[in-house]
Length: 416
Length: 125
Image (cartoon, rainbow over all chains, first blue to last red):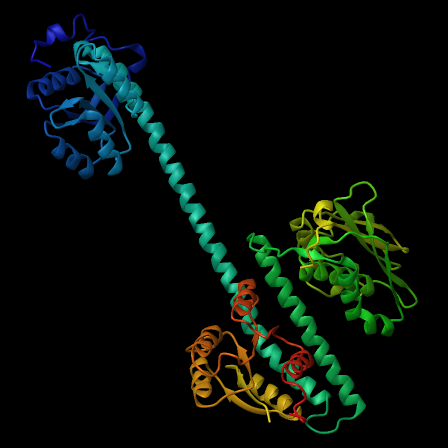
């Protein structure tokens, strides 16, 4: 840009009559970068003539100095000459962006330099003005748009920063919760282990003979230790589920064997409570692809509940069978002849911490995590769990497990 | 007589296991941290090691890795006991060739059965 007289640069500019829409004073800061001092003078004079603008204008004819000025104090808008000697204006503003400049910039291009203009716009310039067209209206239009864009961009960046910060904070909290639960569980289980150990040692008579009443009382202590262990494991599982860190180790499993293993744990308790514990295994059940510990945990929770809510003389049954309609699934159900679950509770019993509080002794025990854990484990396997119940008659919980696909089922590989 | 090293930083657990193992006819040496366990295995040979994982100074896994590197102890069966539920621990124990892995609170009869499987009846050996 040569130092032309102003009058030729702004022919017929409405100096005293700014656009009606921009009557309000617009305050902003601006940095103009041009290696030609007289061009900067022209620009300065033009800008001063816009009555509705109150501009804090800084100018620089040196790219390095310009970067320093921006670092020192940001500008709402930068007007940069494309040709700056060693660097071009777009490259310079890219550097400024890397140093944290968030405002908008407008590139001044030479006459008819469409290619430069296009490159500038692609690189993120808000607008371009050909030096030939430099005038009060072209400056008003380009800078007005740039300011609006700058305002939006800064708001957007701020918003994104807040979200990123919130996200990092959540992740940090999540891992803090995780490690807290691990520590909690570890610290509680250690004393629980020695308490249970010495109770067992006493019960086994290793510290001298005991009366049958003493053995009975100690068995209560041992039972309480076991309840505590279940609670601790449940708390830890739920913490893992909520942070998405509970992972399965599915292997090829014979569900009948898992059912046997589960029922063995409950045999004596069922006998004591005078409840018949039965299993019905349909012939030809395909192997399942499940995490055996987790499925035993689901079965255990369901059988535990069934025994808890069934009166003496009742029956608890586990059934395993193929899904009649879909060979990809195996159905497992646990039914009881207990008190049943009222309809208004059925939809919610799988929710975390939901407990049916009906005042009965059974309903007051536990943390309300068991069925939530069952549902999450079944879902992690891709299956689903449902309940059917009739008050006074009993309940049936049924869940699906993925069957080993047929082509794999017939492969010669042994069970894992 | 088979000699078993029991390592746990909870002295009560060491006491309980010692009592059970002695009652079952084994000789027991105890240690309360990983470094002491390494000292014990450098001094004498054991038929089996029961090792807690979360231990002061040198954790149970690292102690076993060092023992396996040292001559003379590489074939000694190790049973891990831990109060931690980190699933990766089981894998690490497997990769160290663990002879057993029991979560606390463990069922003492299960540990004893496993030891008897590994060492045979202490009375006859």
